[in-house]
Image (cartoon, rainbow, N blue to C red; front, side, top):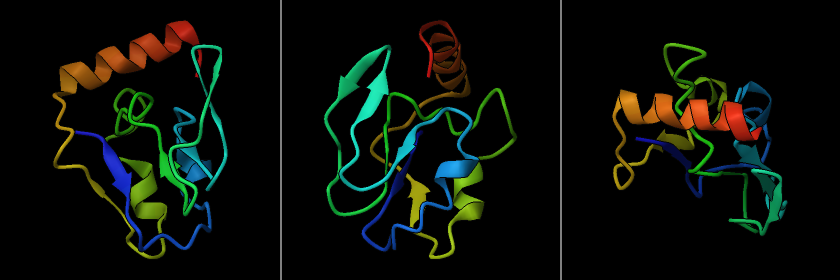
Length: 99
């Protein structure tokens, strides 16, 4: 499953620097996916792009953003469950199209 940032986020962006997939963006920022500029997913606080989040599979043993968050605002997304195989396939796709 991917991780999400809750409303407890203080938008310090400490998590953004830890993400190897460039999946974390500041409030109101647009993001890039496969060479296309996409609209922001959150205007209120830092957010994670689900299509780019692999929970750090292929890089680390656990999501780096969770440990970096000083407010514990990053949690597992129970509504977006993915297997290790799905997460690795997502990482491989990101390797191909660019982060």
